[in-house]
Image 1 (cartoon, rainbow, N blue to C red):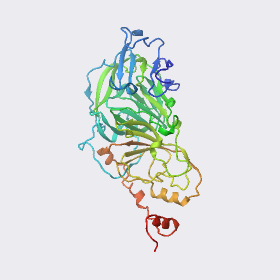
Image 2 (image 1 turned 45 degrees about the vertical axis):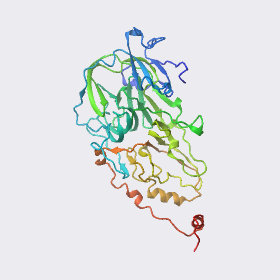
Image 3 (image 1 turned 60 degrees about the horizontal axis):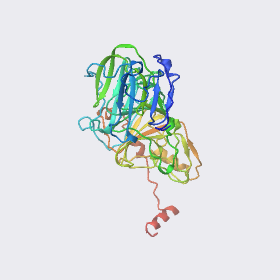
Image 4 (image 1 turned 120 degrees about the horizontal axis):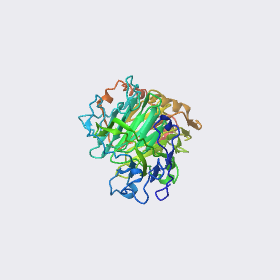
Length: 472
């Protein structure tokens, strides 16, 4: 469905019970112009802001880009709600011991290191902790104030958000759950996200996270000043990687009830502020536009791989990209390493040893990672910054070459790893560097790599001759 097609309007009546997550309906497409109404006849005809909206609702626009952004990049949505979002008390700084969110990375709140870093999975807290309370920044670069940069967060939580909603004024969240489902209520409707799926919550939308499975853990990438989009396919053609039809957008859902003391928690410049109101922010009866939260099932990704020799670059597995003004250079790419076949002949099949002008943050949702035989665990993470060497550990290298050139096709299964890759050099937060879960012995996985160099054998002699050297 493109912008010129009439969207199908789906209805989803008001239902505040948790059972409403069991039979959710979605709209399909990526950055389409969607329309949805929970009560038939709610959307105005022929205009977006009539003098009187149907059912006595308020019309409110949320803009994700400047008014004059090019049409193909312009994002906005009209919301038709019981009360407008402006109806709240003044914001006040949140008085909390939780001050581990950063959106402007400087030498006063973070530091740099070229050392390879790895973290073990962080324990789920024992004390009651919701999504916002369990969210903390690991690293990032740039500034939300300057509208350029990114932040990588992780979260651990064990309880649902209660009588409150969160709003990120700094940037877009890309959430990757690793343990436990997330039931996310947004102003556009509801999303259910399981491990193996992702959700993107654009800047400015209010949302609440329920934890139907209890303990939950995951990763969050945040981008400032831009939005995620599908990568160009180039010579791949018209099909492959993440298909637009597999992205799912919620249908309208609302609640209209008196909620005294309801709290809006707003992240603004990396700081948290709260404002009280007497109603739920999820009172949008209908909406239309192309700026909305969405989800994506990573099992629907169509991967590509080399079919004859050599190892393809990881960019071939890009799901979403947040671009910069420089063509081909990403502020942040979201790349996955899903189950797939390896068939390359006479090839070292695991990822190659590498120094990269980009910086790479990796996480593992389940299973193992093909380049690390030990130590990289589901729920853990690693960071290889700009030009920091990295690659397969000793066990992986030795096991791979021991199989020799006669290794037949093999399938990587029961694994799902991912990477956040950025052109910016990340600064690391002190609590991440001082964490008891940091792997101080990470470097040891490469120390055992021994020299296999020899001047004996045909391949070595051929190499010498090609380099202009004579045999003794």
